[in-house]
Length: 233
Ligand SMILES: [Zn+2]
Image (cartoon, rainbow, N blue to C red):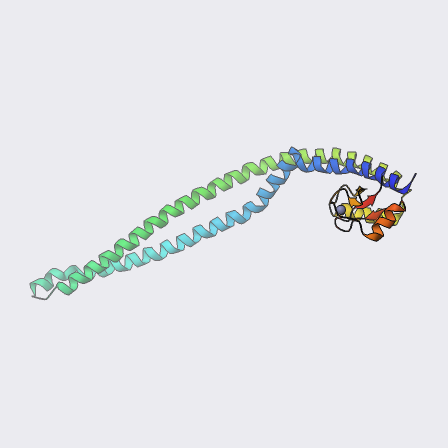
């Protein structure tokens, strides 16, 4: 059998392997398994970030609480304002002070309310994610078992094709095979294509003078653009 015919036979068999790989990559089994796995990989980091955010809010609330208490205490200093009034003091300064402190207290209170609201929301989000993580963990156990079973079947199918490939490969030069496998690993497929009007039938690149000579001599050449093996039918 001529060299190119063997290679074509190898490629036809190899396309079955590619088909199985594609089927596996698009299977529900793989999608379910990989999606739950990816969720579970990211969940701890997300939960941790949420927890850190909640802690930050608590620290800020604590600060504000202290500040509020301190300011409220200073208001007590004005408790004896009535005595001052009776003593004939000018109380406009004190009044201004009191109103400033009251404004500050209001501002703190409103920031605290906002923080309490956001800490509630953050907690709800955290609880939801935690619940979801637990349910995905259960799903993952199931999906993982199903995928392992599916994979076993696919691997057996692939092994059968690989056996066939080995048989064909015996008559192909190791050097050519090595180049073929290299292209295969670069996700080029089909690897062997025909020449039409001195052009690569896959990408349309014209053959070089050397390429033309090889093709005319019945040899296999390589496309200079897409690097596929080219032959004349
Ligand atoms: Zn090409």
